[in-house]
Length: 550
Ligand code: G6Q
Image (cartoon, rainbow, N blue to C red; front, side, top):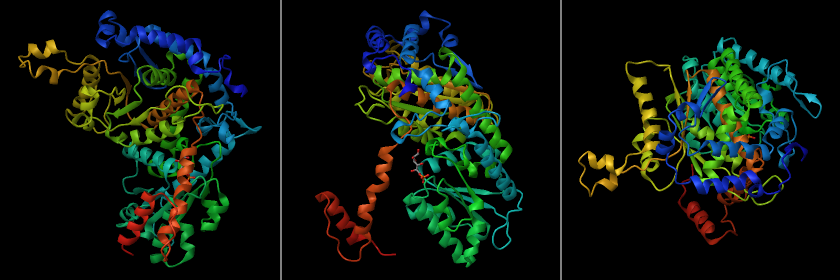
């Protein structure tokens, strides 16, 4: 594993920086943010970083200058710079799958050269983008017609996991820029309700399905794809219609052909691009159809700007590095194994769900690259909802619960839908929440308001809850790219410190085969002989007894 370039300490907790951080934590663990701010009036401007169009205020984290210094030292000892170089130069850093990890090549400019096994992959990437743009232009300009000569008005993406969450999130995030005379829907779940609700009011003559599956072997996606085919053919009654109403995004050309999709309408990608890192590849075809090729390229430029920032900015001013290191600090020293992502931008309502996969599938790992048990907790649990909605529900626990929940607040200075006072009110809430979480409300303040003494403890907010605030000017395709890349590289940074493989997903692979044994036991006409545990056996028997045949 030459790429690690780490200093030769085999165990994370034996690294000098880790040990210094552990000692430092004992000294600072009861420091309160109000003290840190009152001791340093410039803190809120000092502990910030700006790059690739985003502003990060990390001053409301429970850190001192010494904490940051030691975290940066840890990044050095863990060989983070070498890891970054290894990723960008196409080395096989996904060791358990022996694959390069090159989502950064998906947004590289045409003149760049990034090699995998001696082959420059950038021209292939740009060829697929050009193919997507030609196709998308033809659908959007209504020169691509359905089987009966009608224009396409509805686009349905069928995919799951990485082949769904990115497209849905990007469509919702960039809806402002999307074609309003077209309908975009996303089917992922094998639950027939997902399919039924997505298609119930649509006309197959005007509907295009994009079957998104890297492997073209995923149970949910193939089941939905076959149902889509049957739904189409029920009305169009001609097998040839498949060619006008289905396109595919896959690395499995054979599987696509077998399904009956024209290989000319198949958009490829590569095994060096993992599902959760693929929204800007051909997996983003629905995004391009919605916002147009020009906007899609603008999104790629945003990704690329953050890639360049990550690769070339000194770590003490590097947004993803700082965010990643703070996540390690919060997770492993403060013991906060969770992160709430709180976008104050309604268009980002699916962003937390997208990040759940990105962060948790990447860093939910229990062994190191060498296969040894991880010594410290790895990937925190990501979740969230847009503000201000969450303020009226789960924020209670963040303010006063016993669990420590670090939060990322995301806001934009300009609204895409300016309307009277709305945007000022929205941002006022964002700023107020980070302030309240940091500084809380003391018993003295509450008593001074005339609160009866028995009520005072209930109203106390201790504060000292860590938050990051990410501010950008406006949500554009470019900003979305910057934001996604920021989190991708923050997740990468965390994985590099923990020395884990952030790019495999063996737990998810297991899930893909688990149901296979039970499917025939549910479908067989005869009572099957069950060999599971008594709970699973009883559940299967009960289901067979109570289900209603269609
Ligand atoms: C992503 C995961 C997973 C994958 C889905 C869909 O990193 O591997 O979420 O994207 O299981 O797989 P297919 O695209 O092969 O259908």
